[in-house]
Amino acid sequence: MKKIFLIVAIFATAFLQNSFGQDSTTKTQTQLSQLLTSYYGIKDALVAGNAGKASASAGEFVKAANGIDYKIISEGNIHALLKDAGTISETKDLKKQREKFATLSANMITLAKSIKLGTKPAYETYCPMKKSSWLSDSKTIKNPYYGNAMLSCGNVVETINQ
Image (cartoon, rainbow, N blue to C red; front, top):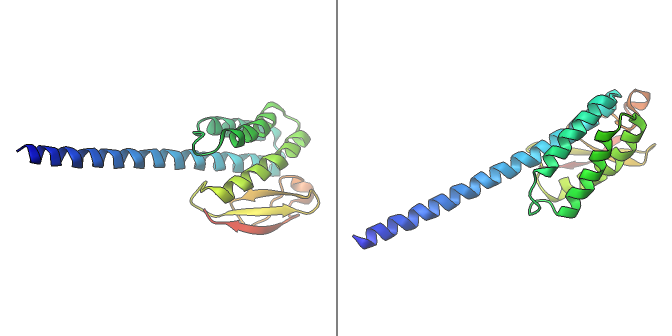
């Protein structure tokens, strides 16, 4: 009887540890997906020339980044992302937002190449006029650095499979 109880206890413990691990993985993937979605929100607002929406999306990005464990993304990397997104969220100056978006994008591209942020491919897109890249969820070029002035300036340089 003791052996049966011991075996049941071992199986129960193993099952619970496995399910906790899956919950943690699911939570982490959701947080990373929210981070990427918020980033795309900033990009889309800059494409549209909407500084208010870019600021709000950057605020969502900051919130998502603050929720990510340092075991997933290092503290230094999160602070770099927070610095740029924080600056974008605190200003309504479209030119300043676009300047900070370049460094935010460089950091996000590095991150997307090192860990899985979502379920769909991300496209690294490059603007030769700005000499900066950004991530997009589509192969269609919509330039966040110049908006309507040069909407289709750029080209996809890499597909990052998530």
